[in-house]
Image (cartoon, rainbow, N blue to C red; front, top):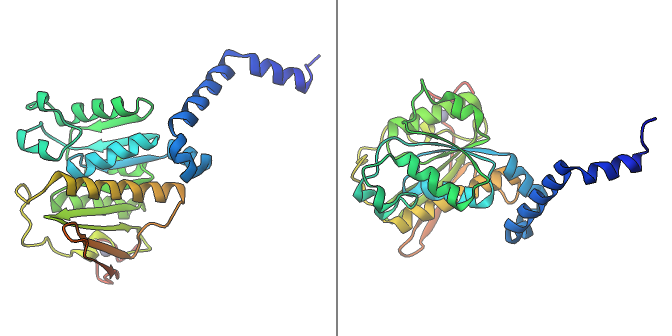
Amino acid sequence: MPGTTEQNAVEKMESPQYAEENQQLVKELFRYDRQLKLLGREGQRKLKEATVLVAGIGGLGGTAALYLAAAGIGKLILAHEGIIQLPDLNRQILMDSARVGEERMAAAEESLKRVNPEVIIEGHNARITLAESGSWVRAADIVIDARYDFPERYALNHLCVTAGKPMVEAAMYGFEVSLTTIVPGATPCLACLYPERPQEWEPLGFPVLGATSGLAGCLAALEAVKWITGVGRPFINVMHRFNTLNMSNYVVSLRSNPDCVCCKNV
Ligand SMILES: [Zn+2]
């Protein structure tokens, strides 16, 4: 004879698996208590189920990854090549002075795990390329472009447009920060906005203060949280720009380029 519904419920509640799941839920509600007031349990659940690709874990992307981990994102896919160098440390907060000369990604993964061991991290000690990075983009719900050089940013843009994935485009130069979210088919893409690589760009020598790149990284993380949870509205079809020295700011309306080499057929 099968048990009654009540008996089944009692058995379920007394099972070790139920106790474990319940304990995990209580732990999560406690950990995220302060933000549940803003996102709700549904928003928190969406964060836990989401995957974000953070392309670049320097001053901007490292800060974005840190706050996404702290907020309880389910999975972070990270990409950044190379070793930690002393001049990285004025802004790359996932790094460690004691580990100069070691692989950047390993240090980042350890830092993020210390902040929130619940987050799944898939780290790639690699640059963004059309050939290698497509699966990372397809696995993500949203992508944060935090690469410093234009060839990689164009490659990431192309992959996002092809896969139909939104891409947060946060950038800083000197004391200026700019922010928009690109949604394939609904907004211009990066190649619409910058058809050619800006002439003044110095890939490895542009001026940067950690507080400014960190601010841009926080804004990028917030854009991703907004997109995933539905709280607030991401900045689409507009680019916000502001100067962090005097808080002067302006908003630019964005339009697609009908002849864009990347997105004209999307
Ligand atoms: Zn375009």
